[in-house]
Image (tube, rainbow, N blue to C red; front, top):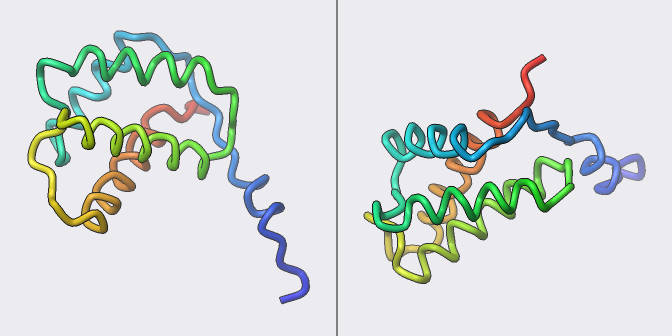
Length: 113
């Protein structure tokens, strides 16, 4: 156990995003919300995409874990305001759903080699 270092683990899980533009973000979230629950309500979908685009452009972190936390937090914020459809009342279920969506988002944004 003496060789384990959490900070080294965080530094090793970096992600590099491909080029981001708002139209690709909209297409990505359209596909994601067709496949996964919960979904962002239609009347706030464009705002959600713009918020995410601004967030992705403004935060210069490359750590994958931090991005999963940021995306999950964003989904929780939208849920608290009532902007998500078909959400569970159980926060542990929501956390799992949001974590899956965050992993999918990161996978789609990852720069292709």
